[in-house]
Amino acid sequence: MSEIIVAGGTFEKDYFDDGTLGFYDEEHETAVDAILKQTKAFGHTVNVAMLIDSLDMNDEHRNKLTERVRLSDENRIVIVHGTDTMVDSAKTVQSEAGIDKTVVFTGAMRPHRLGSSDGAFNLGFAIANATLLPSGVYIAMNGELFTPRNVRKNLEEGKFERISA
Image: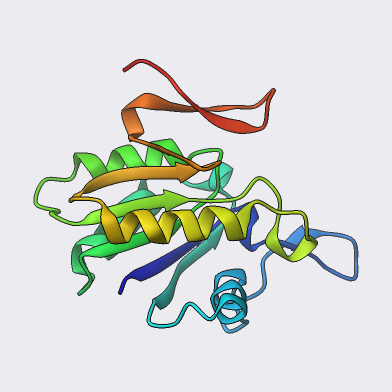
């Protein structure tokens, strides 16, 4: 199976009683856990590396994610990440020499817990690709597969799109 590393992002956010949008603590069931339970997709290990908005992510966070990938016992890894800086983190993991694993980044444009989210679709698509693809680093969003060098987030259209590298 695969390891799913949760880094936060919109995928994991929820509205609280006070009207703020944020993260539950690491002891709370993640949106990823809820999706896997609902779809009966068993056999995947879910580990929370951090719960952070990707706009707040820095090189230290990216290095921590890279180290988690390197130390994982699994060779097929999905990373649930915020969409704003997902490409930067994927490039960091990709540039790390010595990682011979299949790593697929994914996220959501709208929190899973709010409904009408692309999160469950993107997660399933990422898991399928992590299972089938050769070693490398990929981004799975909007039903398309990208490499970190050939993708960007189009803010106007709210989707990821291919660019020439």
